[in-house]
Length: 226
Image 1 (cartoon, helix red, strand yellow):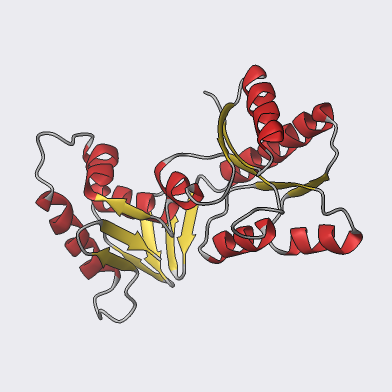
Image 2: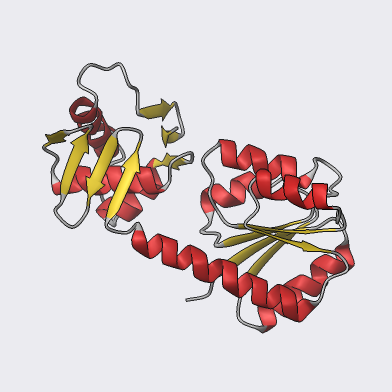
């Protein structure tokens, strides 16, 4: 299965160079000259890696990544930037970089760095497959058990799958069609109100006191684990 890389660079020649060469070695690449559509793409597509310039027309790239991190978006990031001082590189890592490459760059080195970052991320993902956590909610996927703090709560298999999907996509608004497709495997024959009912029951079980508000309803859109 192809890994998806999102590239943001305001230099069109560099962007085309990266799109061509990354596609050539087997990656699926999306390229942008600014950050305008990045949040939407991250919410709609499975992106495995972001390659981000810092000198962008709309926002400084490391500040944008810092903003993504504050929204719990953990997609790995490699900065590819002409900002090459030790302070610049340090700031890049402090704001959320997984690696930092300075321009001008060696294409072969970039490809090796991409492979290394993706490899580390895959290993971390494998280690986290059996357990998921969000605030004080813990899912033990081996035992099919859910805990709030130290207390086990009883969820149906469907409710557990729903909570798992929400935690895996925390910080993203999931619309009803997305939930129907991934949980019920059907967007045509099952009414969207089915999702509303399931979410309501899940909320009642994980937050009976209605004081934690784990799951937020975004009216007219869907649901968000913020």
